[in-house]
Length: 197
Image 1 (cartoon, rainbow, N blue to C red):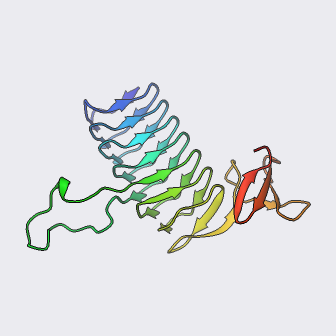
Image 2 (image 1 turned 120 degrees about the vertical axis):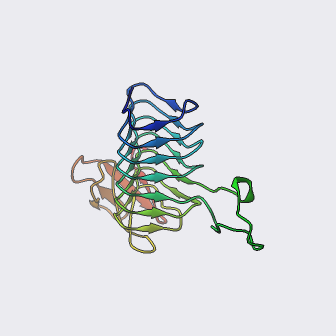
Image 3 (image 1 turned 30 degrees about the horizontal axis):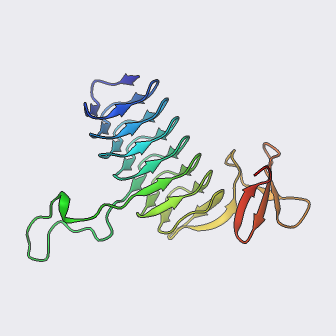
C-alpha cells in the first residue's frame, strides 16, 4: 500500500493491499478500497464508498457516497457521481440543511465498466458490466451491460466487449464479434450477453 503524505486518508478507511492513494486525494471514513486500487491526485472517495479490486479513479474524480464500484472499474479524470435527488443548501425555512436532512442515493458501477473523462452520473443509476460511458456524457438512467453510451443525456450508440473496443456485426443476425479478441456476443431484446454465458 502506498499513500502519499499530502493525501487525506481517514484512519477509519480500509485500503487494500497494493493500493495507491496519490497527492491531495481524500478517502473518507468508512470507505473500503479493494486490492490494487489507484486513487489519483485530488480524487475524492466519500464516506462508506465501496470499491472492489483493481479499480482506478483518475485525477480529480469525485465519488460521493453511497457509490459502489465492483472489481475493475475505471473512473476517468474529473468524473462526478452525484448522490442527492433534490440538492439544496437550505431547507424551505432558510435553515442550513445537515447530513440527516436528506436521503443519499448512489451510483453503482458493475464489474469492468468505464466512465470517461468529465462524465456525470446522476444518482441513482447503475452502469452495467463492461459498459462504457463516453467522455463528457451525462448519465441519467441505467446503462445496460456492454453498452457504449454517449451524449447529454447519455444514450446507447454501440456495443462494446470486455476489451472496450466497439463490436462488429457477426455472421448471423443478433450476433456481435470483438475485432480485438474475437469474443462472440449475442443480442436479444436490447440485451447483450457473452456467447459463453
